[in-house]
Image (cartoon, rainbow, N blue to C red):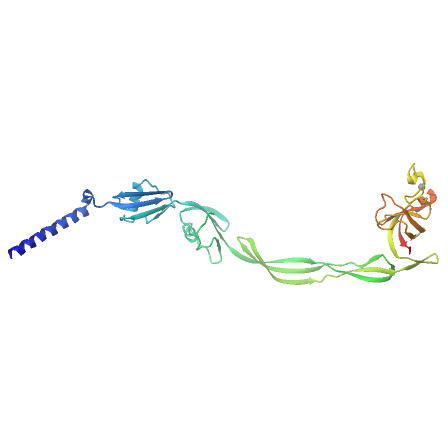
Amino acid sequence: MRISSLIAGKRHLAGLAIITVMTLVALGFGVKTGLGTHDVKVSAWDREISITTRAATVADVLAAVNISLSPGDLVQPSLDTAVEDGMEIKVERARPVFVKFRGRGFPVFTAEKRVSQILSIAGIEPEPDDVVYPGLDEELSQDPTIRVAKVTYGEVTEEQEIAYDTQKREDSSLEVGLTRMFKNGTTGLLQVIYQVKYEDGVEVLREEKSRTVVREPSPLVLLVGSLQQVSRGGQDIRFERALEVTATAYCPCAKCCGPTAVGMTSTGVPAAKGVIAVDPRVIPLGARVYVDGYGEALAADVGSAIKGNRIDVCFDTHEEAWAWGVKKTKVYILPQ
Ligand SMILES: [Zn+2]
């Protein structure tokens, strides 16, 4: 009995001692015995610090390692968290994120990367119709820009011209080689309606909804000559083709052909009545022709000013040339 009561007494003493130590720790005297220090790791942007500290909260730890925070900086775990052994504290610096909301832009300083979080910090709540770039669930990449745009739809009506065709119609009263406009063409009108999508008023998509012909085009009708024979002075003239020309008169004199004129054409035929000068791309040199108002002639000369549907008609005298002057007329190319 005696022994057992002694042991019981010792146990009692030991229990008392433990309670005393715990009380001291609770009262803050534990520091003296080395209790109450924690090994903590802090990572802040480019540095990593490992310390043994008696700091009580995350905020105290940061103060102890001289890390001061700016608005928007992100600390994990939060500043008021009690320090534990082996705790890892992570500090991320805020950076400016440029938020553009319905055309208005402003910076938000935050270390957050998730688009929805940043918009929430900026106090922006996109409406269901709004479009967000990058998407709400995405994280910002290198480009620190978020755009929230209002999406609207509208209709745009456009009118387009419809080109007209050319219809050719043979006309036996018109000489071969000549054409006449019988009826001018008119363009048609097409109405196209588009459904247009806008983001902040800027068109981003256009889809055709309908197209309606408001007015059909009307073709141009061209008469194409098929007449191969004409009558001049009671004589029938058969020809291969006719063309309309501007004919200028001249004679072999110095006034018409210059002071050095020798009265000779470029082909060696003497310049006289019955000789005309032509553009060889239009009337071949050597061609026999009939010129209305002038008579039969030979295409025997060229001239630097004679281009296209122009000819020079030669007369024997200056007076005759003067009387002709410049006339619009027809040239019939005769069978060679
Ligand atoms: Zn002359």
